[in-house]
Image (cartoon, rainbow, N blue to C red):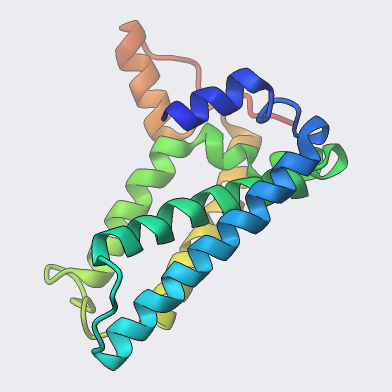
Length: 175
């Protein structure tokens, strides 16, 4: 959290184009550290060999640097023309974030837990990821279609109506 605050206050998140050199160093350095630590972890897990490096430290040097690398790479990739196209594509997901989150929870619970299809543990990683990606893409298109006709997602509308103590207007989507 403190790293995020520092990145915001320094302007790194608001004006990434002014910090390309720093972002490139963060991207490459943290990718090297994170990828190396992850590779060592996978090697240890798949061969059963114990490494001379503490497992907790190895995990710490894996996830966090990779998160920094992904963030820096995304900031480097998101130049102003791309930002407009990408943000327009994903804006509807953000407007319906609570509806989409609850939908994902219900759908994936039905697919993976015993009260539904019970596929947890019986389905490999690749098919599970493909299910998640397909659901996400489906939500992307559904959200865009929904918001052409309505101002809010259904759960956002209910939440807003309960917050203000009266039914909020629902019709009148974005053009």
